[in-house]
Amino acid sequence: MVTIILCGIEHPGNLGAVCRSMKNFGFSDLVLIHPKCKSSDQEARNRAKHAQDILKKAKLMSPGALKEYDCVIGTTALVGTDYNIPRSPLTPERLMSMRLPKKTAIVFGPESSGLTNAQLRACDFVVTIPSTKEYPTLNLSQAVSIVLYELSKKSRVKKVHDHIKFASAVDKKLLLKMIHKKLDDMEFATPEKKQTQKIVWKKMIGKSMLTKREAFALFGFFRKLK
Image (cartoon, rainbow, N blue to C red; front, side, top):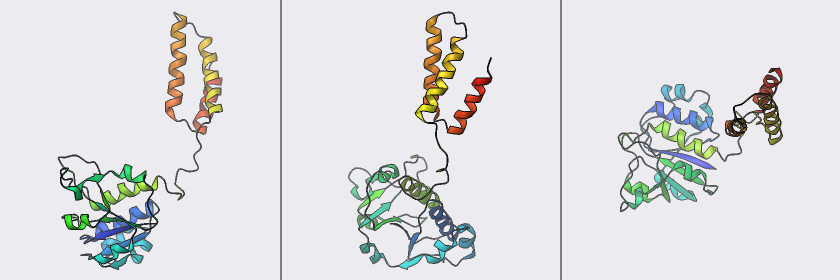
C-alpha cells in the first residue's frame, strides 16, 4: 500500500484537492507532518468533494514516522547537477515500472519551498515530474495527481473505462476483408495504387485502436456502400 505524506502543507485548498486526487486514483492512506492548515478547514472540505473519508482519516505524525516505511520516495521540482546526489531523480513513469514494497511512502514538501536537501537525503530516492526549465514547479495537488496517475496504471483497482472492449484480431481481419472487397471493385490507374490503398487502410486500422462498437459501426458502413 502506498501512503501519501504531506510535509508542512500550507493551504487547505491543496489539502482537499490532494484528497480528491487520491480518491480519483484509488489511494486512501494520507499522512500529515507538521501541517500549517487543518483538515477540518471548510476550504479543505469543499475541495475534497467526495473524498471526505480520506480527509477525515488523515493521520498526524512526526518526521520520525518515515522510519516505519520500507521505502520512502521524495519528490522535488528542483533538480540539481550530477554532483547533487540527493536531487538526482527518477520520473513518475519510471516509478510506475518499479516493484515497490508494500509499505511505501511518497513524500511531498510545502508549497512554498518543497523538501529540503536534508529531507531528501532521508529518502531512498527522489522523483521529479519532467516540466519545463522556464517554470518547473507544479501546484502541489497537480503534482500528486500526476504521480498517482502513473502509479494507478498498474493498480488492480477497477477503472472507469474497464468496461470498454477493443476490436479483436478477428474483427480487424473481417473489416479489412470488407475494405479490400470494395477496393477490388474500384478502378485504379495501376495495380500498385490499389495495393497502396490496401496497405494504408491496414495501417490506419492497426493504429486507431478501434473499440468493438466502432468496428461494428464500420461493418455497417461498408455493407451499405454500393
